[in-house]
Length: 574
Image 1 (cartoon, rainbow, N blue to C red):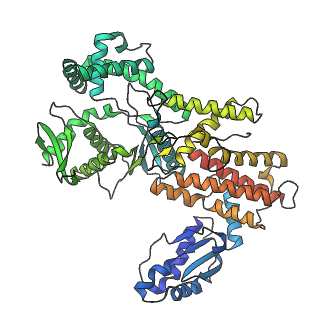
Image 2: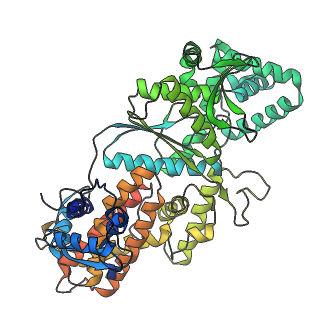
Image 3: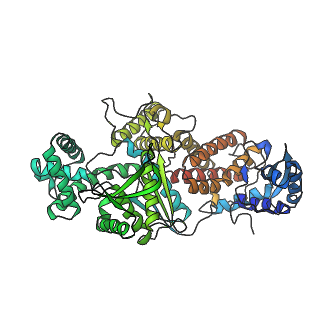
């Protein structure tokens, strides 16, 4: 088998496991890691340390036996036993060069593809009649990156926007508009989202203060959920207004998503309740239908109820999410379901998923479910990010500010006609700052930090890409007609090449744990390694110009593809 037919690390790992076969123990993958320092080889293995106790032998003795077996490897130039029993593995030069040839000729950079199974990624999920705000930023950006990754790897991806388009807030808003602004509830109205949000706030105030209005609003919800014609007509008008506002944001972010809101599942909500009843899995509590499951207790040890039907006959988020699981498995035939929401919904999805398995909607041996939680966006003072007036900042305002600041930065650098560049740089800075943070943690939003040209920022990586395009323009060489292969002579060339080889490893790692910061870190180090290569290895008019042009081009293609997976565009000047 050619070394370019799959991830090189998988070939190395296979040889390492075979080298340890004398242990006569079941060994698994995941025992090979890239070396953090070049002096410790290209890859490292500490399997001997793990096996020492079970084999009752010194780890170094075990490592030496494995190293002897690996001396016959077709991939490895050298194997060192270091310290108490670590294996340092050095790839053969021609293995790396052969991979570079294959990668240069490959549209997909030799990243192994998967079988085209159906994967559903649910993300963004704003609420109708409310502006998208900075809290939706993370869900939209993270979800889009995950969807793009899955698409690149070959999955059949369904991108779902599970918008909040049913519930108490609609009964409240429709009741208010019927009384005060009936013209807004007709198709073809000229209302915008900002006006609708103002009405929503007024309706919420009245709901909180007026018990009679509160009762009317709840009755309106039941009417809507039961399909009452006038209520449904009013609801459609509200959704249309909101949808226009949402798509302005999605267009700016270059996010493509299919809307399938809570209302989509309305026809099967009663079936969900009936399924639990028929299987004896729910019981009435205070007039509501509840599911009680072990493992979900409050601080006093009482089992928490998962309410699937309210005492007034209405349904809630849990009912809708259970219906969504059922539909996505039975109708969409999903093999993996990914739901991106804030960390505060972790308990909710843990309970809903457990209930879905209990009733038979989910079988984790057939369909994998991942809840992808994320932390808050904080202001530099460490508090939840808000406007100066204390309100949650609208996402449209935040993005426009980022673009304006990027333009000012480009103006200061003397770059003319920079409107398009500023848009890419500003939006990229916002996206990259989010994705480069571990999504589970809160992150601090700072325009100044994200627009820096130094450090792990979009600007730094984009500048490396721009430099590569500049080199290619100055060289004026048609690389497709160049017959010479890439030859690695300088350590900086080899370091860059090895990093390029690990692109597929990083993408498949991100596929498993759904942490985009793996990819941002990879791209940051790729830009660093390219800069070192550029410093140490002259390209234009050098004896190795064609080889180095190909290596630079390959680095640029990796940067471009990696950024594309993150939802970030590229520019050719900065």
